[in-house]
Length: 182
Image (cartoon, rainbow, N blue to C red; front, side):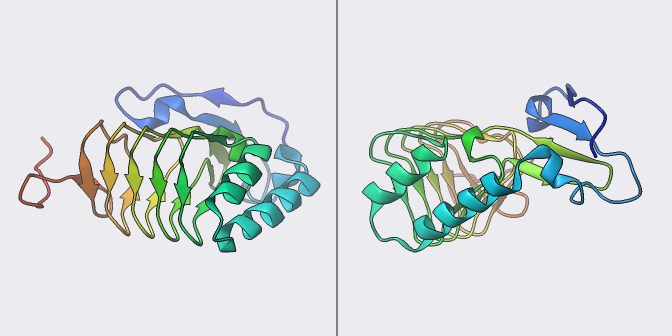
């Protein structure tokens, strides 16, 4: 059973300052007490609805179903087949108007670690694009008009109108190469 209260940690300049950390004391890793964090029936319903959304070709149906789970879905949002919003905390996801979440992309709002779990909102800005197979970690904000290349791991915020690629995702120069981060 989880006995410690959640807390936030400010690590300026990163997604970590937006994460809520919940200690999970005991002999096991933080995945064992997950039913104390989220009711198992809620997770089962979320999973079933998200499973339907993953295989449905109807964008209208996907947007409607996901909004019923608490995802904030803007006008004209497109979810690719097999795309997966967070099953535990879908209510922490915001996808703004006309954004695209590509085939098999994953938006995570939680991280189960050894001695704690972390949750954080994910925001995909207006007209942003998340490429096929990309994974967005909790607490990340993807700016308006930004582009995330296929199979990238987004572990930091993406500024508006910026293209990122790689593991971890880094901004690209105009010629498609990664910029040097100083």
